[in-house]
Length: 293
Image 1 (spheres, rainbow, N blue to C red):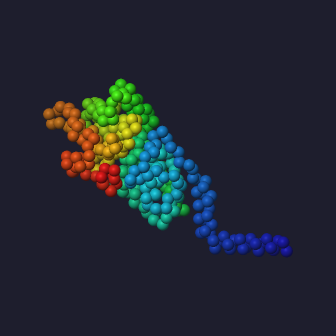
Image 2 (cartoon, rainbow, N blue to C red):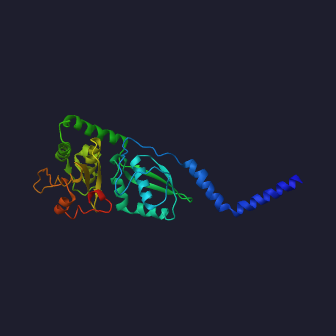
Image 3 (cartoon, rainbow, N blue to C red):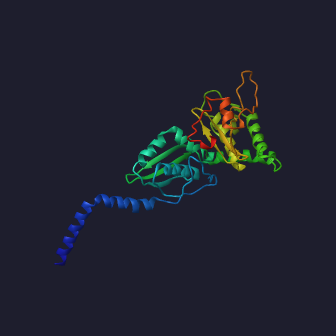
């Protein structure tokens, strides 16, 4: 009799598992698999505790709308963590992340808000059937490159910066040093886009100029981020209660006479002043870089 009861209970169990298999699968994914793969986000020394109008740091393991998804992507990249898994908890989340990753303007802007050492060269997105998303960035700068850049800037600060200087002068002296020791590379090569190439070769394109300026500004505690237009990038700096543009690339022009020039046309100027000087290379999306409005 007991044996028959066990067989009966087993049949009932099999029937229940078959009927509710989808719910059981979701439960396992959401509670067992997800909990096992989830971990606390870790932050390296280049994490910036800065919130902006477009994106903010978020303390969560799941997202419930598109803005939270943007915030999550920003936080993960900003943290410097090697990989992080979070949960999509709204209907269009998977479509939204595919849209964001494929939209170069949006994903580049998120990269622009973080410290250059935490910015990514490429990013891998893994989406599970249960809606778990694992983000794995591939960073632009190696540990050895970071050490060399830090030594370069630290030595400059020791030799050139003192407490008697104004914030304006602290930025200006490095702006001048970079331009006087760098030649803009107009060969069309994509090789010179990093701060590392700038300090080791003396050549750069706009990516290198803007990265080296951002790294320096972060070392001195100036809130800043980069702005990208259709084919150019420069810095936006918070100084004296104002957000101002700084474009070392355009202050280091390629002259037809072969001489090197140091300009200040694009040094700590307002958006109005910027767009009076140039409305082609410097036209940017004001719906993203909201502090520049």
